[in-house]
Length: 530
Image (tube, rainbow, N blue to C red; front, side, top):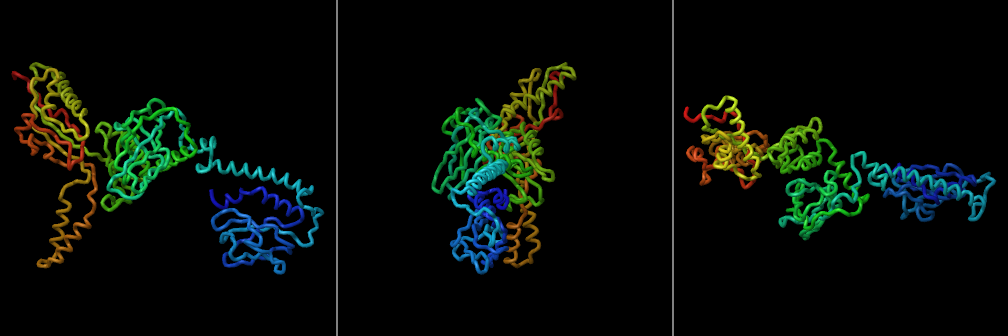
């Protein structure tokens, strides 16, 4: 939709009547002139007895019938239109159209006064033409998401796979709370995704709201998403606590009342807002698309490194994006697969999470005279038992040594379990250690002339401020300090064998997930009596 095309189909009834009456008496209709702001003088093409009307587009883009003796006047001697100072003028370089009467007109019809046969017939024809213009206008507007209404809007948004949500979708209010350290207004846009604490039901805001300066909280209408139609969308109070993407200045979100069915169908404005949110997320490789697919996979996006980010969060390769997410280890492959399906060709996405991997080396005493196949089964069941224990841990929950031993002792045929060693790694999420900074400082010091403290200060300052960002790679970094004894120090061999240790799941007050990395070679079976 553009201004020039829009003007072509906006023909008011009175303007059409004026054109018809001017033509009936032999006048000139819609003679075009290109307006130039540097000139106020525009001669007519043919000798005229007077101008009936001028139409065009103003500087504000409004279609207008200009006023005689206010915006312009007709100079009979010069046979020209003169634009008046202080009046409304056409937009620079736009076309204005002039209707005027001709000198020595030969039309047999001359009575165009109100009530005359000529005028009555012209008004009847003009009404039909105006109706056609309005119908064309309606058909034109029905093709755009901003102007379509009702069924036409349903058809427009169906291209995006969006359907109008009816009374079958649960609705409610979500309360957004301001971060006390943040000042100023905070806007919460339509289509903002939220979920329950466990991520099992998704909602989205249906209207835009702005938390004004000094306002502590604000209620925003929400509605269940397509996948949670009907009873699935009904959740108790206090359950909606997660945002798909953090909003700067918003500390938390909650629903003080349960969501419920029985509201009105989704309005045109709400449907437009939701469709636009979907459209923003459909752009392959856009951050909005990636955020949406991560949230729909019931994961949380924590941090983003991309070429357009701030210096500390910027990648040096165009088209490369690093995403730090929060999700259970068993769900990580499906989240990464969904991101790979969403990203655009040429966009390289690295998906990482805060995982602590550990590998226990175990000595297991078993009953005597067990067949080779039986031994393989015991090994498989030992790993499955230990995996079952780890799967029951949440984010930030450490893996306890005695609990691991107890889980493996539950396997049939096992007499004794001793953990002889534990290896541990952490994912590289932008904490690769001090080596990069140390190397930069050493290079700065070596390149500085001895005995020049000011030059040394400048070199060290440059090294610290211009060091490239330490981008996370997701690779494993060995960290034996994650295996700790009862006192919190690095566990000794004796504490490990006595199962008095734990694999911690917290680094710098941030919660991580522990992940078991174990195979058959990590288990040594000893038959009792052998």
